[in-house]
Length: 222
Image (tube, rainbow, N blue to C red; front, side, top):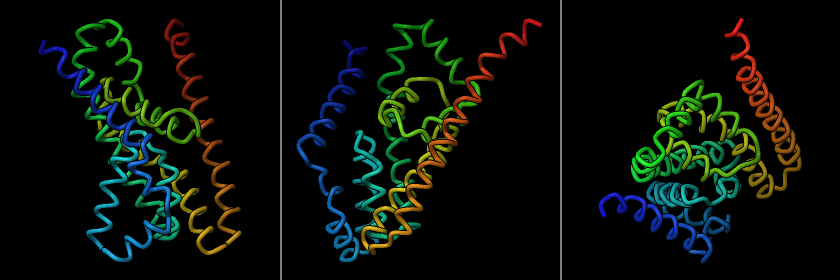
């Protein structure tokens, strides 16, 4: 019975998170004017409260782009990008630890051989792998966090690669939010350009890493 406690707890937490987002309990992040008014009226305590709620929101699978957009509107592009990146990284850390504590022990016991192979696959250059995943505008932030936590990847490369990979896209949406607030078309055009650049960098990193992974076994045989 004890071995089922961790998976059941993880299932309960996941269900609660999905329910919170589906029922609109965290819809505060869809209203940039309310966020701006709350921050202006509550100062540092309000900022810390928004940070905690934002970490929970993105950690449960809420779109980090929305957090960056709202933060950009409320704080301006530079501050909003930095704030949303730090908050989303904090949410990723919480999700990572939840999977590491609640999922990994059971998976390791049940699928020992497969988990060993998986750990070996992510052990090499984990920062570059996470960075490439975060830069590409595809995939699930939540799924990446869970898979990383369930694997043997170390926390520091995971968080470093995540923060660096988040930042360009967060700046893009923060610029968009700030441009909406001040009606600055130049900021919107810059956001589009940065989006294209971030996607290109992510694609290059992914292709280079994949090419190196495919050629190393051949070079070892010569």
